[in-house]
Image (cartoon, rainbow, N blue to C red):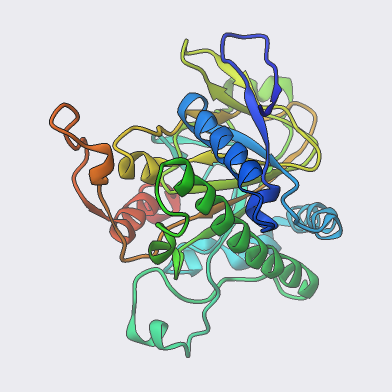
Amino acid sequence: MANWVKNDSSFEAIPIIDITPLVIHNDNSKSLQKTVNEIRDACKNVGFFYIKNHQIPKDHLSALNPLVQEFFNLPLEEKMKIHISKSDIFRGYTPLGKELTNEKSDWHECVDFGLDLEPSHPEVIEGKQLVGPNQWPENHHNFRKVLEKHWDLMIILGRAITEGLAISLGLSKNYFAPYMSKSHSYMRISNYPPYKNNQEENIGDGIGAHIDYGFLTILLQNNIGGLEIKNFNNEWIKAPIIPGTFLINIGHMIQRWTNDYYKATIHRVIPPKNKTRCSLPFFFEPNFDTVVAPLDKFCSADNLPRYKPIHFGDYLERTFKTSYTYAVE
């Protein structure tokens, strides 16, 4: 049975799952089954779970937060040099209050990254949607180096977790692999600065209540909390910081694929008081051209498909266009 982080509310718990069998393949079918059973329970009952023993090097993780803080501590005019409006593929810096959730401004600043393709890449020349170069701050070469390494590590980790999800659903471990072969993932660094008490009435949530639009989110946080999850009694439950773990949550694409067998959980971020919160969510996504529709396995005469097929890339672009205020300024 998984280790559980107990909360004082009716929300049962957020499980901590040892994913060793997914990242170190030693043919131990018993330990693998234990892990995927725990993933199934977590996805059915919570929608979130922590992972430990993920094999991401500690020295890499310890290098991330100082570099992220260094960027966000830059003067605003420096950060604005990579403003997201300078990219036609939604890459770059978004200032405080310029991103929307449910048509309300969020209290955070962030930088978005995708697969970094040079302008000379054939897919960029072809004009394929949402592909191209990232924007990187000048004279911060180590920042780019470490974040590009993080991207590579998260793609590997995302594929491993996806194998566990597939097995947990009674599918072959490689079922989703063809849909993830050219994963159209996104990576974000977010900064939630502190605010003064007299500002409070003018401040919205760090991120408003929502479910994640995509397939799977792999979240790394600093030592300041703020993420809250909505339980089945409509109570907000804090997601505590667990050193050495990532926090995983399933998104709307898994919900659609499984016809609500797995459902994404509503969550939000409350902005900190007198402290700075940083987070690095990695959104592990299907290929751009993937068509997502309820699988036959999860449909029947008594449980008809609840969703129409959608083209993931088109859905993603529509989502981005409604998330940024700069598009209408």
